[in-house]
Length: 79
Image (cartoon, rainbow, N blue to C red):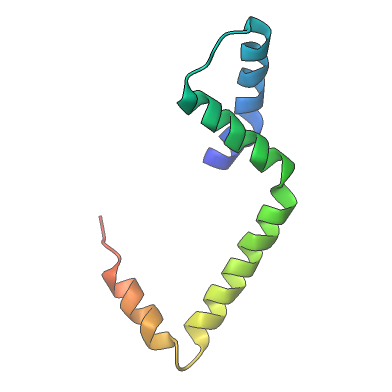
C-alpha cells in the first residue's frame, strides 16, 4: 500500500508543488526524494527483494541455520 502511494500518488502531488513554486519542509522533500528513487530504481529493488526472499528461504531450510531462524521467529512480538 505504501509503495503504491509512493509510486503513483506522490508524483501527482509533486507536480502540484512544482507549479506553486513554494518552499517545502524537509520531511516533504525527503518523501518526494524517496518516491523519485522508487520510480527510477524499481527493477533493482524488485531484484533485491527476490534475492532477499530466496536467501531467507534457504536460511530457513538449511540444517545449521534453522535453529537461528526458529529463535528469531520466537522473539518476534505478537500484537
